[in-house]
Image (cartoon, rainbow, N blue to C red; front, side):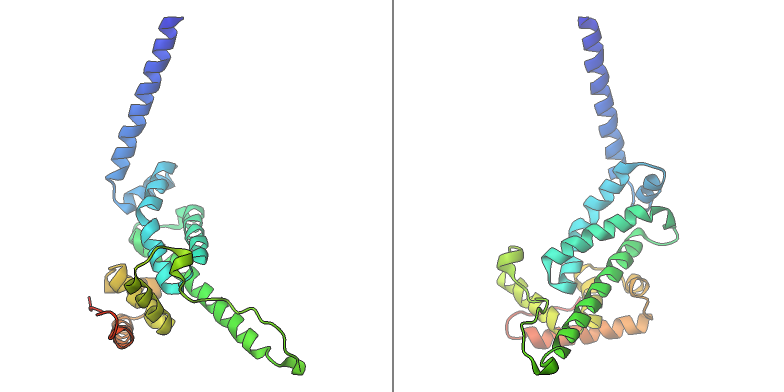
Length: 219
């Protein structure tokens, strides 16, 4: 009986060690190799991709929308779509491009919904000559409610919210996410010239908004 217990414990230790070795090997893989592993049924590969990109994607969504709670929902939805549509991914595209395209589409859709709701609320004012309370989505940055943030970070986010969304998205992708111009063009579906033009115009607008409080450096 004691011998059987020893054999069971030894087997469990070996299994654990084997799992750790496989996980370490997965950690060394590229994003594209991890997707291939995930498509083949290795769930741990998906978990590693989530670990790699969660913080970066949250930063991207937050800079785009300025609403931490909603961004958390969109982050979950992004990875849910990656999980659901894993077999539609092809290695001809970088995984990061495919991932940011999904997240970007969700963010743009959310922005359009907010814009429509705001317009509907504004148009409802004085309808039938009546006044009543309206619910307008709060898109303001609230660091005390959403996250610990420096004063400089607050100024940057407030300035981001001031520039048009078309400029905001490409500036975030380039200057915060550090993506290449060709990758940004693929994610947004815009010509390269348009991407560069919008980045330059977005930077110019940010410089004007931040000149008195924070030196915005071009990348």
